[in-house]
Amino acid sequence: MAVIELKDIKKVYGKGLAKVEALKGINFEANKGEVVLIMGPSGAGKSTFLTIAGTLQKPTSGEVLINGKDASEFSSKQSGKLRLNEIGFILQAYNLVPFLTVREQFVLVDKIKKHNNLSKEDLNKLFDELGISELTKKYPNQLSGGQQQRVAIARALYANPEILLADEPTASLDTANVEEVGKLFKRLAKERDKASILVTHDPRLEKYADHIYEMMDGRMTQKK
Amino acid sequence: MFLAFKEIKHEKLRYGLIILMIFLISYLIFMLSSLAIGLSDENTQAIKSWNTEKVVLNKNANISMSQSILTTEDLKDAKIGKKEALVGEAPIVAKAKGKASLSAQFLGIKNSQFIYKDQQLVAGRKATKNNEVTVDQSFKQKDYKLGDKISLNDSKKKYKIVGFVKNAKINIAPIVYGPLSTWRTLHDAMPNIEASAIISQDSNYKYDKNSAKTYTVATFINKLPGYTAQNVTFEMMIGFLFVISLIIIAVFLYILTMQKMHNFAVMRAQGVPSKTLVNSTISQSIILVAAGVIVALIAIWITVIALPASVPILLTPAIMIVGTVGMLLMGIIGSLIPIRQILKVDPAKAIGE
Image 1 (cartoon, rainbow over the protein chains, first blue to last red):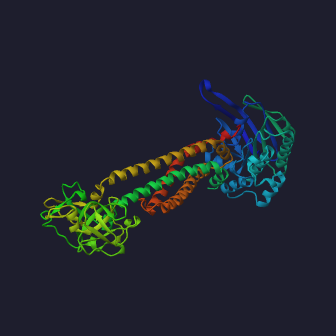
Image 2 (cartoon, chains in turn cyan, green):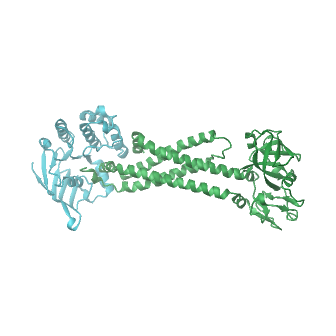
Image 3 (cartoon, each protein chain N blue to C red):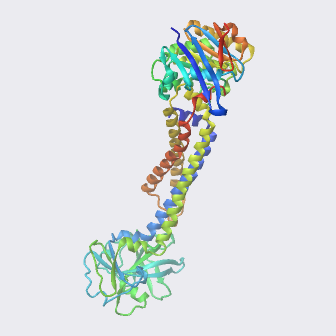
């Protein structure tokens, strides 16, 4: 069973002449252990897709199934809980809390979600795996773009979610860092059995994807 | 609380400036409150030390003891028991040779009545002769000593200071206690003039005959010259300071919140509940106010110690408690405005920005 499935998702903004159909009947699914890329130009509907798949907003019609449960009818509180437990968000640069050190970013999750986080050992292992063990006392503004992104990935993984949703994860990275992040997502999908869904413009990530979807004018087609 | 503390620790300058503003306002509130209470105390110190409940004055004296004259005729049916005392009040200028002139209030009293008996001496003894007086201890600050001989107004007669008394101020002026007969002399009073007032410690005391009329102590105090106007002025200033502190806290927190909207959206997107962000903002406000108020309390305490005793300032536990609670309340109310914005944060805004 797909860990996340979107069925005939439509999203309409505005009314009358100002009406915009951002998504025009999207069907999508992703399984554990897969890296899925969502590609397309600006304005194609990628961000809207991500916000609906991540339960940040409700679709106008259609179903969002997370582990078989229809999340499109969830209350704001239920959606928040779902995001905290089952979805790891990796947003564009500057998505770390600026006044918390790297370690404190994880303490914050501990404070909110009092159980089911990684053990200290596993967290240290994750730090090692992502190469951020030496950065735990630094603030986000003391890190490079690549380091920030690795910390963001570690934080998304800390709550041990099944789904990783990444918004332009390589937006401000040079080629070496892009390769590193691509490999990392691939490894996380395979070794940690996550469904990694990456919304990106970046063709350099294509080689790490199991499936590639292309979005254009609110419609989605599978390319790979 | 975790987020609130961490953010303040990280943004020391920004939050330090807010704490500085809160400190200045709190300090001003404590200072004005202490001055208000200090002045109020100096207006009413003696009246309160007598445990006054009722005051009988001439009904045409506009409830002013220094303007009141009660004659033998007025008092012929008055019951003067253990809880009543006759007082004659006259404004004077006291002066001893080589010492500064002091504006004071002469209070003529009777040795057999409670005001004389209950004088709280800090040095010396009570006056027993017609040429002896006891004076408020503030005379000591002007270098007056036991045994000094003072003249009252331009009289040639000298009066010997035989005791210093505490809690002996009225209308912000120190009191010189002496016999009622001396008051009559100072007043150039006719032989039938007995006193200015009857002071009673009995809340049921009433004597409304002839020209005499009984007033409650609250009515009497409120009619002390300048007392009500002075208190209302202070209350207005303190009230405005609370309002200003509320506006400052609300504006600062609102601006800071608006600057953090993207962070809040990111945290909401990651599943951080609104409740956590709201608690953080309220905690932040409480921490900022508490820090500012604590520093202000320390500063006002040092100020009160450092100020000369002649400054009528009185820092009481009530001022500290009411001021602190008031400021914390302003902090909590001030944080409610940004909270509205936090509750409206759209986590979808975290995407694509």
